[in-house]
Amino acid sequence: MTTFERKSNNNRVMLKVGVLGAGHLGKIHIKCLKDIPEYDLVGFYDASPENAKIVADELALPSFKTIEDLIAAVDVVDIVTPTLSHYDCAAKALKSGKHVFIEKPVTKTVKEAQELIDLSLAHGKKVQVGHVERFNPAFIAAQEHLNKPMFIETHRLAQFNPRGLDVPVVLDLMIHDIDVILKAVGSPVKNISASGVAVVSDTPDIANARLEFENGCVANLTTSRIAVKNMRKSRFFQKDAYISVDFLEKKAEIVRMKDATGDEGPFSMVLDLGESKGKKEIIFENPKVEPINAIREELYTFSKAIEDNTAPIVTINDGYNALKVAQEILDKIKSNIAQIG
Image (cartoon, rainbow, N blue to C red; front, top):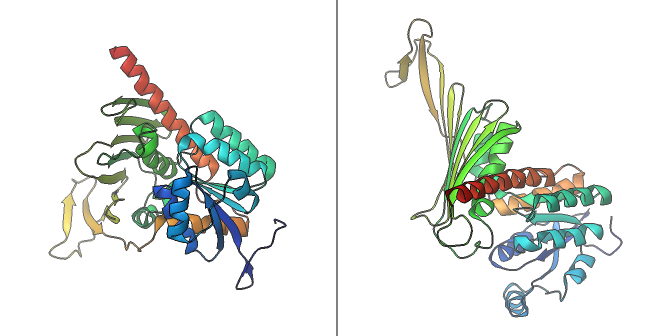
């Protein structure tokens, strides 16, 4: 509990929060935080004085002159700065005794992520990483149907946008799917193979990776930031079921098999698998997908984790694990490129 004065929200203490970084995504965070009654949004900091003035006027929100001033005024620091500055901003906040929400990827390096884990433990503060696809309503609808998937295929394709070119496409886009897959499989990664090509930047813009897990599951991930059209789809194959998640269109489909009973209707799809396995009925389901603002939801659940003293839905360890796999993928790509010459 901090010592400075806080507003009350229906007899509940509101968490004072400030945003570091008011670019495209930072502005979205600011608008979402304004809409969450559990937070008292006190202001933001942006490294560009010109942009800070524009945002302050546009969103009617105080702009702090330094990072340190903002950190001193809040309980929670929401970091939406470029990846290269994530570590410095989060370290300052944690050392000042503040909870931290930090956009993905958690840091530039695995070593920095480990140091933030150590700082969060040393200061007893919570950290949540912004792997927003965990809060995608299509994934939420499909998640309860996932049961030991053994093959996963993902495609995350984006039309070219100069925003995000400060990091490789693996850290910009593929890391979303890495996090989702690690959550769905729940088994350590045993082996990684990967390839990629730099087309418009100095780092890979197209990449493919194959993850092999200790439990036998295999995941094949493809991502591009120079695609003709946008696509964000994942397919999970498991015993007696196939689950499709469209993260972009917010749709989910479950195709599963069950033993045929003989009472199927005239339009039912029944497969005869032979004498030993009998007949199976194929069932198609489209689980209800609730309209959810995923960014608002992840920020809201972080406030609940702080209030209830529970683990955030996406912990800093989750962010560390996703970054570690992503870095290994980049190392494999770099090694393959060096071999080609």
